[in-house]
Image (tube, rainbow, N blue to C red; front, side):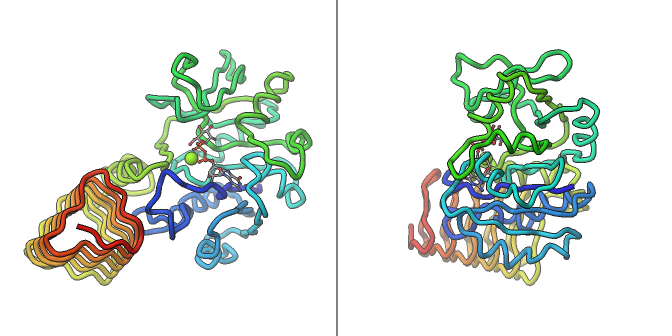
Length: 343
Ligand code: GDD
Ligand code: MG
């Protein structure tokens, strides 16, 4: 089976973390996000992956290479201009052969790929969409089905008055090649706003596969932090908490014995945490330096930041290479761009 992963979005809501790091390379438990997506496909027997990309792709390619490390083959396809979620799939049509999977590249989940493909085949569907319940569907694609699971309506980003269910598009599809024939070539097309509504209104069999495992759209830095809280507390099959369950520290770190690290906390490789510093409910990427008596709380700190002695960072996300001056304070909710000097 082949899979197309869509990694062409701009990830604007995850700024400043994604200014210099593509969303797919953002670390989750110290490993690039996309690695989990690829491993989930690989463990369910997918052997060929097409990465449909548009923006900041160099680091993805150098990290994943030809995919052999993950037991898959990876082909990289660039869109000259962003084609949208259906246009990007249409753009790789010549590499596709038979029933295939298509996935949003920014979803972290335990979805059982084997089961969704089996369901799709049993229903004799033209398209099958994984479905997940959420509290507030307004930021997602709302899906109404009938009792047999057949999709009756697909409504992307519904207004509050249009919300009729809490079930939404989980961003993983099984598609038949006939779907490709209904996407116009060389233009921008949205699978959510155009292709699915068209398939449904023309009476083609589109089915929804309900799924109960862990699911998270890592759209904002708050959700990114929530993903780590969930993973460290064992809510997904991707991580089994050990004895010091809520703290994960990468290789080559130097943590002063007087520092207080209170989970959930992930610290990347090559970091230093100085005397009397406090780190709580945060994710710190690689090569970050915390001086003495620094306090970091409910924050995300990207690569190569320096937080000088006595500084405080709370409830915020710092881009890479930020420097917080000694005794400085970063106000909760502020956005700190890469390379800035603050506090
Ligand atoms: N190659 C390519 N080209 N990829 C794209 C493009 C494009 O022009 N536009 C978006 N993508 C990729 C993004 O990188 C992301 O992985 C995926 O397509 C979905 O785009 P987002 O911009 O993240 O959409 P969203 O999060 O607002 O909504 C989507 O995901 C929800 C679930 O998280 C929709 O599919 C919703 O229906 C769904 O509920
Ligand atoms: Mg998204």
